[in-house]
Length: 252
Length: 364
Image 1 (spheres, rainbow over the protein chains, first blue to last red):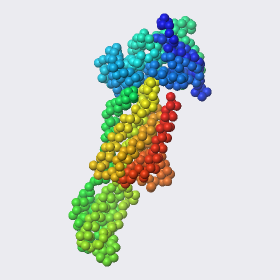
Image 2: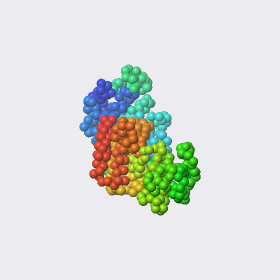
Image 3: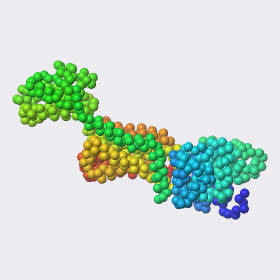
Image 4: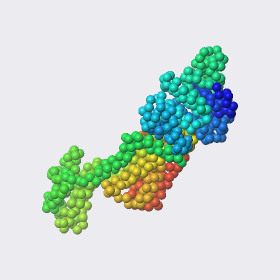
């Protein structure tokens, strides 16, 4: 989809490894994410997704291997990385006891946006999400689907090069999930790469490319249609099941 | 800097959006001081007096009628034997008992050694002190006006049930110590752990803001709140309870800030050890507040504790703060006299901050 854009990948890692004592959580993982790409990062619980994501977002240092995110080295420049990425977790990452606009202002302020910029971006964001009337509403009073949309929009407010979404749609109905994915597509069209983990296999179908992690290693990486062809099945669910069955680690 | 201010702002919102907590935080010190204070300063009026007069001479009659005539006491019983005293006190029918031995006037004139005893229920220490003091004053002034006694006589006061009497002044520094501990340690730890629980901490850690800035921004609102509490406690104690501040206000202020920092560090440390608000609450509430209340010398004098507990009480920051605060507020000493306490508090602060920063970064 974005193959036309000849550019350096926004994220590339080689031999990325994280070891806790004798336990190898992430085992020599290598992959790239292109600009504007929606990259699905799948794996059963305990496969090492979270650990890998923490290394990519500058939260923990790899035991071995190298990589760049948004043009910065994950070992030596984690602070610069933090400035150029967005992050949203399954728990929506908003402050429930702050109003909608206060949340926007807080996160815009954390990422160092200027006051004038913040005001303009706030209006724009509220309009886009159709939330202008809810400007002064406490986030705790918004429906779940709205909170997620708001959280996602805030996480890309500072125009990051890549945004990490850690199971962003946990606990919502399929209709709301579809609406959420529309936002993801919009962001990708603006050139923001999306790095998303999910448990829902229908969502895996929405990704440009999908990687499936088993026991700390990436066992498959391709477009959803290629993967289905390769495994000779008709759904991503079936692909995932075949790979997950080979796992030796427990889910905890 | 702007980042940081945005953050401090947010912390204030968290606190002030939660009305009940704010009311508790700001109201509690006032309520406690007033409660404690009025337990201390209650005027004695119409306390029920019983008398066992074995002399029945003119002087003893005068003493008794003077006591009865005062606003403070009402003579409600004339006792016939000593055996009646204890049951009356136990039942709470009587507040004060005056016992006069035989031949009072005679002894007073010749040997000067008289037999006069006041008995009072010591369970309520403050009240007991007041009653005996008033009674003593009335007795002395009666005798003086009669020119019967050159000096004053000292009645033998027997405080039943609670021989270890403590000063009323204990309460102001004590309440300060407990409240600051509660607000700083408990509220900080809960507020940090809440962010862990709701997942917002993760987002903050991924953001460019420095972890130390996150922690500092959390501490500042509680520092401000605690400072307000110190001020309200001092004002109340000076103007309402008439407990004067003998020492320097600067020293008092600096000492409070030092203790607040130690308590904040303790809260920070707790928050790095646990992952749920409930756990934070239990640890700061049960493991910190109860020892603070019981072992800091506010309720029970440290000197009368078992030796093991006396040693244990040394690790309680509030104990050192209360000791120093008492010296500054009541005795009016300067910094040179509280160097030991200040030193211990500084040491505790440094250890706690180092330990929690270490734990905090390991967790990353």
